[in-house]
Image (cartoon, rainbow, N blue to C red):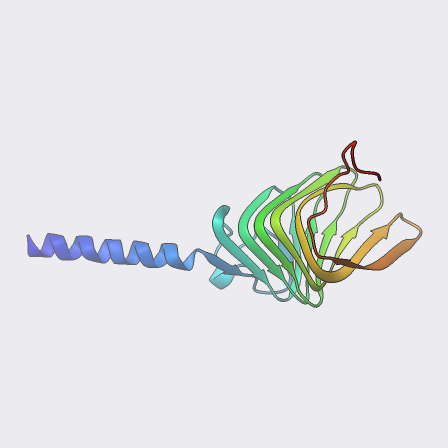
Length: 169
């Protein structure tokens, strides 16, 4: 009976340790797809509101819808492929952190908070985007129509929403 209890305790301990480690994923750098095993120690990403992604270097392409508790970018690029959706509690774009929305259909970014801490959001030619969240901080908003690129510093300190009939454009 003691051996059985000891074995059960070891299994529970190992399982709880693995679950705790699965909550934060750090990109190992380089270029690749979000679904690659280039996350912390070769683990593949597992979607979930309790999973946090930290990308401090490299270039990551999202080719499928992603759900995360938080996404933090600095000195890295995260590109949302055509028609894909990124859902996160918080998205933080630090210095050198670039979120690129590309393709010929609507990309969707849903977040409670989008923190621009020196990073940028870019949209490529032919793209439409739906972004929902409270924007804070300052950074660049870049729009590229294929032959010209416009870049402005964007500073916001409140939620941005579509105007209603009562609000002028």
